[in-house]
Length: 431
Image 1 (tube, rainbow, N blue to C red):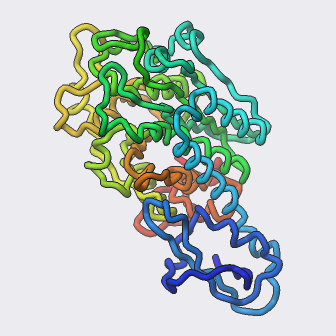
Image 2: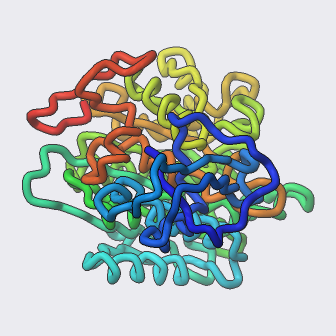
Image 3: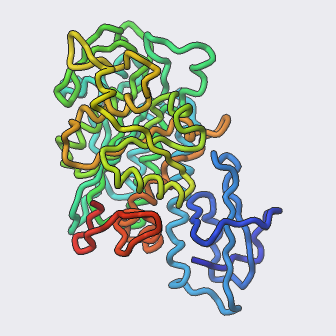
């Protein structure tokens, strides 16, 4: 799609632009603020310099001097919502834990809920323990601000499937009693990047119109040290009903996400569960600084994640999915499993994701997708808002927005380049 821009817009020094097939999701909302004044000019807009991918450049032009109509520019109206979602996620990730604790994160969730007319479901502190959320409670029980599970739910009439986005929201990760060192602990305010991206994407998706049931599940805790902290050798009963022997308190993200995906499966009846997390430092080694890692039980969704990443700039690369060879890393003599691998050289990022999957079951018939965004969640000292654009593009076919429909690699009504992902258009199903 092409459009014009205001004469007053500041041009960048570079004439380079992406091809017409590229879509820039973030930091370009200013382009449409005064569309009724636009003329036939060419303009190139760069994204935020904090982007993990550097500047994204795109040109908007029209071929005549006639005014651009609201109808013609309508496909670009999603940009302000997407931009706001990216900035919301980046702001949360950049905010230190003395300000962005679990209570403050819940306030952010409540603000989004109020804006969208949704009352969040919140389970916290001792209620988590009572109701069996041993993962979230065990990780966060030593902190001053108690842990919580929060859910924002969008359930429109006519929905044909239920989607759950589950975000890891560790507002600070000391490592617990398996404590991090002085060089590895700074920056752990970013360990809530998955939950922040889910919140930003949920807000944008619902504001644009979302046709199917969508639940955003936030697993919030501070992995702190104190008299009540979880110890190595402790055994926790998680929401899945499985017991976990703790052999590394710094492998906490998988514990809270295990409770989150179990809740999405058992209580929300999700057909598609996607969890997003800054889960492992090994992700940056496996797929690099710029690509998130995807692990999924579906070859179609693996390909779709890669394609969606190329469309929106939040790049993704697959991890090996092989539970029959890797899950034995978690073998425990006294519980159903340990929480950390025996061999850290045996695909640790894949194994961490498999731990999460095991709590909904490897034979679960639905689609499970795990996205590890540990490296691309930041560029240097600043957050990138990574993941918001990816979720919007990946699930764009369930949106009421025509441009998101076009961008989504899932459920195309006609064959798409390099893809074989089909869609039951009559039922509007993604799978």
